[in-house]
Image (cartoon, rainbow, N blue to C red; front, side, top):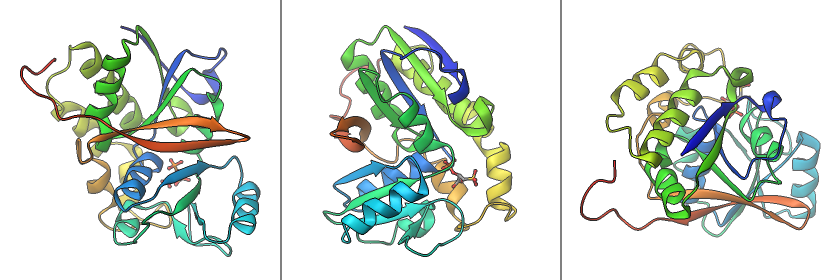
Length: 233
Ligand SMILES: O=C(O)[C@H](CS(=O)(=O)O)OP(=O)(O)O
């Protein structure tokens, strides 16, 4: 499998297959939203768009990163979201890096959004699709976020059968600047368990697929069957 790892600003062409990685915290949060029952997540391009969508659909849950803000129902924290019942709800998510990265590749034939919590399911879906060329979008820190790059490299390895041990990749996530900022209170809208939750390998058995639905980009879970027999890696 041919792979490239690019920051959002480095995307000069529409990739055929894109895996948008945001470990801390957008796509860990998205996975938790689905685990808590959300039907779908609309990825908003701006705070104004998120608020406009919420105004048109008052039963939707508007979520943003940073501190709580008027008009929004939730923040971008897996630790805070994990106790919220989202059964059947639509979430509108706007974050600094993760949602921006997905919207930057919305023309791709296949867009997956990922973090460590859905790593194996994401790799499994890439294998199932027979993807021979995959662009990983490293969303954080202008493509330099090591938790995102580590997760992307791990998924790439799992997808092409070369990676077996997640330990070093997870250690890089734990040592990343984002982890430090979340732990030391630099970022806002944080629960003390957020870093640990973002580094839970394969917590969920689904990949997350983003598709265009009318003018919106919509993320949905894609259940993957449990692996049987030989480990493909
Ligand atoms: O919520 C997060 O941790 C970040 C926001 S920031 O880097 O703290 O400004 O958003 P994300 O898009 O999930 O990386």
